[in-house]
Image (cartoon, rainbow, N blue to C red; front, side, top):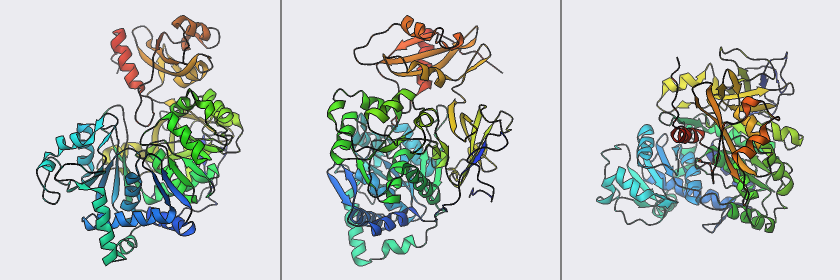
Length: 577
C-alpha cells in the first residue's frame, strides 16, 4: 500500500519547489468492485444503467447487477475462484462489462487483452500471467479471434470443452465464446450464464458467500502496457486502486445519477474501464456504448439520441467527430462535460470541443495505467485557458514531484520527470519484480513523462522523456511545435518527432493530416513557422499523410513514424555512449 503520511496538503507548491499533495478531506473507500456495484444497484434499482446500442442492450442497475451475479456463479461452477486469472479478448460488448464485474465479485483477476493483439501477443499475455480461462469474441475488424486462438490452442478443435489440455498454455482450462462457434472445445457465453442460473437456484448465497472473503487490497486486474520496446508488462491493480480513482474522477466532472456518459473509448484500457464504467458506477450515471469500436458518426448519433451529458475520448476521436461531414446535423446540446485524455490535447481541438460540441465543463485528465490511471485532472470550473494548456491539479490522496536526472526535485516551472505516490500506484508488474523495482522506487512511480508544475499547482505535460529531441545541443519538446502548427487553418492533425542527423544529432520531422479538400506544400508549412518559432524548431522534414499510425486506444505511435522516415530517408542511427 502506498498511502500518504500525515503531511500537509499542497495543492499549490510551497517554497518554489515542484512538489504537490492532494486533498484528503474525502476519505478513501475500502469497497471492493463488487460491493461498489451492489451499493449503486441498491440506491438506483430502476434507473437505466447500461446501453449497448449495437447489441440492443438496455439494463437497469438491478438488471445489470443480477446479470453479474449470474455470470459470477457461472464462473464458480467452472472452478474459477479467488486469485485465478481470467482473460478478456474482445471489443466493447456487454459480455466484457459483465466479465469485468463478475470476476471482481468472486475475487478472480481480470486480464485485459488488447483487441488488436495477434497470435504471438495473445500467447505471450496468456502465458505470462497464467490465465485459467479466456472469454473471447469471435472477430473484430481484421482480427479473426477464432483462427488465432486455434493457432495457439489447436486442441480446442478436437476435444470437448471439459477434456482438452493445451500443450503451449498448460494453465488454460476454459475458453468461453461470445456467440456460437463451431469449435468442440469452446463453451458459449450463454451456457456459462445458464450454469450460473442453475447454481444460484440451488445455492442462493454461492456468490455472496465468496464476496465476503474479499479485500480491497486484493489484486483484481492486469493491464498490459504498450511499450515501444521489449515485451508488454502486466500492470497489476487492486480493487482499492481503481475504485477510488473512479470516485475522484467522477467528482472532478461533477458527475451524478442524472448524467449519461457516452463511452466510445475501449473497455480494455483504463480510460473505458475506470474513467468510464467505474466512474458511472460511483454515482449511478447511465453508461452508453455507441459500438464495438470507435466510429465518429456512431458516437455523435449516440450522444444525440441518448441525450448524453458527457463524452469521453482521446484527442484523435474528438478531431474525427468535429471533422465528420454531417457534424452539423447532430444535436449535441445535451453535452456538458467529459474527459479528453490519453495523449496531449491540442489547444485548438479543446477550444472547438467547448464551442461546437457544447462541452463547457470538459476536463483534461493525465495519468498512466500504473497509477490506476489518473493523477491530475482539471476542474469543470477551471478557466478555459487552464483547461487548454494544462492537465489540471493534483487528485486527492496523491502526491507528485518533478525530478531532474539526479532525482532531485526541481524548482517550480522547470522541466523534469513526473513521479507519483499514493493509493493509486500499482501493486507491481505481474511476475516481473526487477521491472517493478526499476519503476517504483520508495513508493514513487517514475512515469517517464516530462512535466512542469506552476506556482498555482497546475501541471503541464511537456512530452515523454524518450520523445524529447536534442538538436545541436538544444532540448526540443515536440508538443510545443505541434501546438503551434495546429494554428494553421489547413492542418487537421500533426505529430512532430526526431530523426537521426549526422551533423546535429537529430532533426525534426512533422507528419501532417490536412483538412478535407485542403492542399499545402512543405514550403507553405515552413513559411508558416519562420519568424514565429526559433529556427531550430522548424521541422526539416515534412510529410503529408492521410492518417497517423495509432494503437487501438487512439495513441499515436511516433516510433512507427520515426522508423518509416529512417527507412524512407535512408538515415542511420548514430551510436552513443
